[in-house]
Length: 162
Image (cartoon, rainbow, N blue to C red):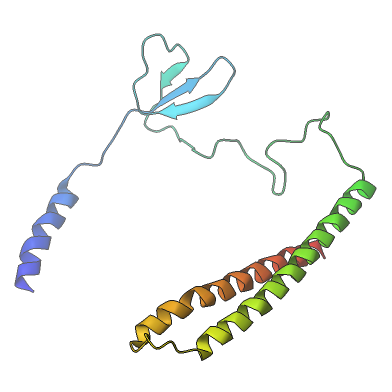
C-alpha cells in the first residue's frame, strides 16, 4: 500500500497543479454561409475567420433551437413522393419477400439441426481426445446459430411491418 501511495500521490498532485488547457477558438464562415469552429489559427487569406472571446458560448450542436419532433432539414417541395397505393404495394412485396426468406431459413435451420444431431451421434476412432470431437462438431453448431440469428432478424423485420 505504501508503494502505491508513493507512486500515485505525486502523480495526482502534479495533475491537480497543472493549469487548465486553454486554446484560442476561431469561428470561420465560408462564402456559402457554412460555419465551422477551429482551434487552428487561420491563415491571413481566410477572411471569414474571427477569434472568439473566452466568455462567448460555443456550441458544437450545429444549429439553433429546434422544435421537438421537427425535422432539422425540411423535405424540399420538388422531392419525389409516392402515393399510398404504391407504398402499400411495396410494403406487401417486402412482406412476401421476407416471409419467403423466413421459410427458406426455417428449412435450412431444420436441416442444419439434423446434420448437427447426426454429427454429434458419431464418434470417429481418431477422436480419443474430446477436444477433437468438439472441433469437428463446432462448424455444425455455428451453422445452426447462424440460421437461428437469421430467423430472429427476419422476424424482427416482419414485426416492424405489422
